Length: 163
Ligand code: ZN
Image (cartoon, rainbow, N blue to C red; front, side, top):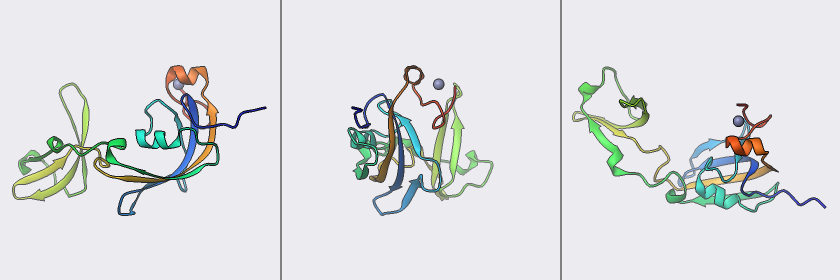
């Protein structure tokens, strides 16, 4: 007797998904591309989606609504600030993503959320922070991770990347 493969810790899971926001706008989808393949229980996808998939068999289809706390977190007001226009040697537009790095070489991404006479308003939160996320998800396959995959902390093989 083989047990049906179900989603759980230390398994390699392959899913198809459609991600929409609380207005029904499409944010991301695997439609027309590769399925998302990840190592379950290793923080590779947002906590709310992991929780929703736990114990589900191959072929499962789910509709999952995830509050910000189980998604990309609440929006942190301290990461929203205004820089004088003179800081920028180029034109910036609302919606544009900017990258900055600190003295340690760590890079940060900011989205331009406002441009006016006072300056350029930037938001360093994840673009999906503070958003309620809805996933329509199908579990395509589940298999136990190999010892090497577990020691590397990521998926190998045709459905993953080699290191
Ligand atoms: Zn590896």
